[in-house]
Length: 378
Ligand SMILES: Cc1cc2nc3c(=O)[nH]c(=O)nc-3n(C[C@H](O)[C@H](O)[C@H](O)COP(=O)(O)OP(=O)(O)OC[C@H]3O[C@@H](n4cnc5c(N)ncnc54)[C@H](O)[C@@H]3O)c2cc1C
Image 1 (tube, protein in one colour):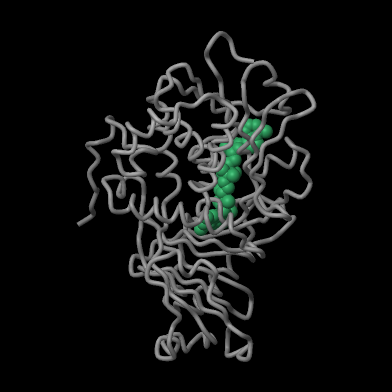
Image 2 (cartoon, protein in one colour; image 1 turned 180 degrees about the horizontal axis):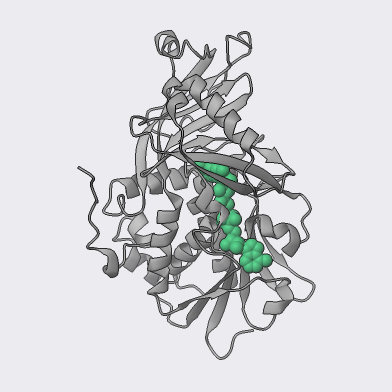
């Protein structure tokens, strides 16, 4: 436990979940000098799963999209949107664009009842595609589809900027280390926040956490300015522009722990994506990457646990395919739990902090990189 009046919080994990949680903690405890935050992680950006991700906002792969998922996704969407319209957008790697989701392939499943996604009311510009727009994709012959305005972020840039912001706060310390047991931190911290993603399988002995292997190809294809999610005869595929590349994907192979790239997957991804945008057949160079998603049978685990050894832990892991999409929303809920465990002066806090836009309350560009300018080849 902490010494004297100081209280200590330890976050394990420095992917998107760990770093957004750290920023949210600093926001809520901005007035507390007697507070120390330690972020311990085996790996940091650019070597986390979050760095591999396509950084695209859309909650998916959750069979039961419950109230929590929608709330977390909505909160994150609004933060990303306001960040896009802020000074941060270029450096933190933001893109705002239309995203088309096409359902069915080659006219199959025509009779299937196509439902609006549950998040349709949370996003800007949602609409089902009418028959003329569907015709635009006649080469795929989808049976239905919808379009939304969304955000994709280049996550390695985003994590870099979040870390720069955190590093400059004297109350925050980063440690590179693998934790094998929570007991290693006993008597050293008041509370642990477990943001270890797939690492939770071992650390918490949660066997319902499994790898969902994702292989993608990053290419240079500047003519692509929209997201496309679509079905093919070989499975689902996606094309997602990021600020410096286009991500073609992908695979979602549960229980596959192979981090090497597989040539047959690469060829399949190119084949599938070329069905949507045939010019992709001419692409001969790309960076192939693999990431293991933290899939969990029952979805995200976000809850408080007191171990039999008396250690306070708040778990936040198992975000599968949607860790970026749910990040800020989950971080908010984690910090709400922390506020019940550790002293917090809400009244004084709100008076001061509420004057800034929410995304600025969470993190700001640091002084050192304000002179950033865009490099152009033209
Ligand atoms: C190909 C691909 C595409 C994706 N596309 C999207 C997308 O478009 N949109 C979206 O929302 N999501 C996407 N995802 C999913 C998203 O990447 C994950 O949900 C997200 O990265 C999970 O974040 P995390 O912080 O929990 O995990 P991670 O990024 O894996 O971070 C976990 C951290 O914990 C540390 N750690 C683990 N165990 C220990 C330990 N024992 N001790 C110390 N440190 C430990 C790790 O080193 C790491 O720093 C994609 C994933 C893949 C693979």
